[in-house]
Length: 271
Image (cartoon, rainbow, N blue to C red; front, top):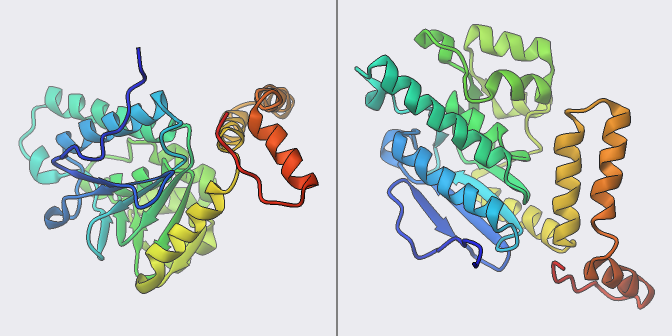
C-alpha cells in the first residue's frame, strides 16, 4: 500500500495549497473576508493536510503556514459559527481544534508560521504550533479569550510560557492585551520581523537555507529538540543519541562526508 500524498490540485473550502519549488509546501488560510477565522471546515482540512505530512514526510521538506491578505493571519475561532452553539457542539468543535493544533505540532518536517497580519487567540495558537515564527512589521498578537469568558485552549497556556517565559505569558493571557511585532520580537516569540514588501521573499530565503541540508537529518534534529525538551536533561541526552543513530546508515551522511572532502556542495537525496 502506498503512503498518502498531498494533492496540490485538490480544491479546499478554507485553504489554498501551493508549491512554488520542489520541497516547499505553502498552506494558506483562505477565508480573508472573515479574518481567516477558524471554523469547523478549516479544522478538518488542516488535520487532513498535516496528517498527510506526518504519514508521508518525504513529500515536502518544509511547510510555510500563512494567511490570505495583508492585514490578518488569523483572528481566532469563527464566533459567528459559534453563536448559539449548544455545549455539546461547542465541546465537539473544540476537540477538533485540539486535534488540529496537535497535527501541526506533530508535523515531522520544519514548519514556519509566516504571520502576514494580526494573529489573535486561536490564530496565535496556530503560529505557536509551528517550529518558529516570522512576521510582518505591522502584525499584532494576543490572547483575547478572557474577554469572551473563556481561556486559551488550543495550546496557548502551554506554548506561550515556553516561548517567552512564564511571567510575561501570564500578563498577556490574564489581561487579554494585544502587543505588536517589535514587542513580540523582544519577547522571543518571533525569529524575524520584515516589511510587507519583503516578507515573502525573506521567508522563502529562510526556507532555501533549510532545504540545502539533509532532510532526514533535519527531521531527526526536530524530533530530538521537540521530545527532548519534555524530558529531564540526562534522558534527553540519551534520546538525542537515539535520534542521531538513525542517521549513521543513511546515504546522505556518506554524501555529506564525500562532498566535504571533495570540496563541493552535497547532493542530498533523503535516504
